[in-house]
Length: 167
Length: 167
DNA sequence: GCTAGGTTGATTACATGTCAACGAAACCGT
DNA sequence: ACGGTTTCGTTGACATGTAATCAACCTAGC
Image (cartoon, rainbow over all chains, first blue to last red):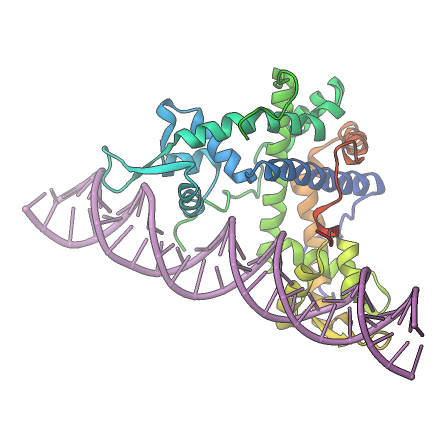
């Protein structure tokens, strides 16, 4: 660590900042693992649920793969692979896109819709149990306030990893 | 799976709760992808950094694999695999444990220590840029307050996935 | 002291996600 | 109509995470 790339001296985290950062990491882990485990208990992964849920909000429970991928912030590749697995489980099916010979449509099956209808209440319970019900109104507004600041892109931010095609 | 699992009516999320939940998800994604990308730019993954960082805090930059795994909340298997990859990159090396014929010690190499010394300031900058510097004192205390509520285990919570050995 | 039963340590096998490259279809200026 | 370029979805190679397995180590009972 002789010479450093950063211009000035390092602004190490102050104690309260360090505590907040670690606290945030703990919350992330706790909530994710909690809700993920509850979903797994009814046979769905988080990605599964997200696909079912967003697809169900569409007319005819149908969407092109690319559109769906963008909406979820996924790569096409990831969704394609995941769709293949879900197709094998009968949760959805592929159908050729009449308006674009290259594309394909993802369509929710009956079984997929039933599964979601069953899972949704359990998932809401889970989100409440692990997160919402533990917080009060003040916490909720704090989260929205923080999200407004953190969510906004800022100087030095690049595009998400998904949207890179060229070398 | 025919009959409903939930006893009473579903307590769907109220608008403010829904907003807070989605805001939280956004924050998770934004912060993780941001810091992960910055680390990747200097050739390290998040797990890489965690291993280097926690190992460096030990006497002789050394720890048994199991101890290290527990400290990081990882499975032994996961750490073993990751250590192999980092070993191949020269960031650390394995060494037989003199006190336990079965075990092995993970030791940080010179190169590993240099890499960490280089990465640490950049990572702190990254955490500041994507998170801490966007928040004020009020936000920080809110996060700690929330973490206290969310972090605590509660009825229906099980052990983390790692610590399960028996059926 | 030695051996059966259980526990702990680490690696192997498998599922899943990412990135880069590809063939096919659509687009577009000529 | 026709090359060149872009976009769509898929696939192969690889990285990563979890579950199953094997090996070494204690400890109790004889």
